[in-house]
Amino acid sequence: MAQQPNIAIIGAGIFVKTQYIPRLAEISNLFVLKAIWSRSEESARDAVEVARKFFPEVECKWGDGGLDEIIKDSSIIGVAVVLAGQIQVDMSLRLLKEGKHVLQEKPATASIDEAEAALSSYHSLRTHLPFQPVWAVAENYRFEPAFEESKKLMAEVGDVMSIQVIIEGSMTSSNPYFSSSWRRNFTGGFILDMGVHFVAGLRMLVGCEVSSVSALTSHVDLTLPPPDNISSTFQLENGCTGVFVLVVSSRSPKILWRVVGLNGTLQIERGNQDGKHGYLVTLYLANGQNKSFFHPFSGVTEELKAFLSEISQATLKKDSSYEVERRLSFVEGVRDVAVLDAMLESGKRQGAPVQVKRF
Ligand SMILES: *[C@@H]1O[C@H](CO)[C@@H](O)[C@H](O)[C@H]1NC(C)=O
Ligand SMILES: *[C@@H]1O[C@H](CO)[C@@H](O)[C@H](O)[C@H]1NC(C)=O
Ligand SMILES: *[C@@H]1O[C@H](CO)[C@@H](O)[C@H](O)[C@H]1NC(C)=O
Ligand SMILES: CC(=O)N[C@H]1CO[C@H](CO)[C@@H](O)[C@@H]1O
Image (cartoon, rainbow, N blue to C red; front, side, top):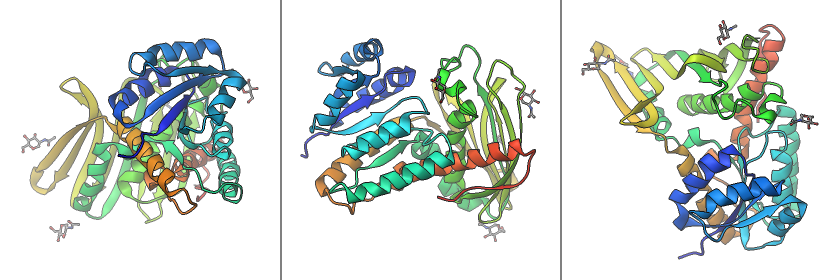
């Protein structure tokens, strides 16, 4: 058996403590968690304390010195970068330049301008390094079984007449991310941070890129940064059209994708069954028939497994020919950002049509 990859987590915030550590603990036979790093000693210690229950050997690292130690430790081949949206890309690039494989949290970038610069820096690494390290974006929707299945069921819908994506989030003061300073200090911070998941779900379901949008945005809930609502129409490259509605904070959360075709309608809705959160997929066919399936969430675990497997393979190959699996690739994450960037831009211009930048 190949040696288990050693990895480190860069970041020690809420998402690391409540998602990364427990999900990694479920697959702890696949890797060694060598270290957790944070800018401050206090938050690094906090996260390490949570992690020690599952990973007794994990080391605590902080500040510039701690980061240097992780960089110089050649046994650490992969890192998960889970930081504020404004600084993730710089950190990812710094570690990629040192030859580490990176799994970065979404959103891939804060804007499309940042995405262009980031992709060109990444591609230029080929000239300095003997191999191209993997740059992956952690987008769990591309690994959710509900979306994998729905993609197949799309064939039964027939010619598509309309697509609806209706998202009413629950970003109230009781949400742990409500006070997040980085999401507030960022144009469209919540819209981008939440929205990339729903765009990823849409793109996966229809198997086609969004080509243009026309959006109205508004600011109603003054406890949230602007804008907190988007009502957008969109057109896909294959000509199909639809609507995308995103309300950051509503009293009755709802998360729904619906594709209406000549032969049937496919719907994916967030819900729970038997105490498990997940998605209910329903296919409505002619004569009132329907088929429905419930899939509990498992995308985060699946995406982590995929990253670990990719970096083990990339390490065995160690040349520039290695191509990361598409669902993990950084550019896929950038494509989700590009759709929201276009909606925010259109909103600023009172609904003027905006072409989505192609990557
Ligand atoms: C849609 O229904 C028509 C009529 O029943 C059938 O001929 C056609 O093959 C169906 N299309 C798909 C994509 O299932
Ligand atoms: C907000 O963003 C500005 C500029 O990007 C930065 O200087 C400042 O430190 C940020 N504040 C917080 C709380 O993140
Ligand atoms: C789905 O079909 C079953 C019968 O097969 C029916 O009892 C049920 O009401 C249908 N559900 C919906 C939402 O149409
Ligand atoms: C323009 C728009 O859609 N505004 C809506 C934003 O969301 C609030 C509820 O949170 C609605 O009341 C607004 O109508």
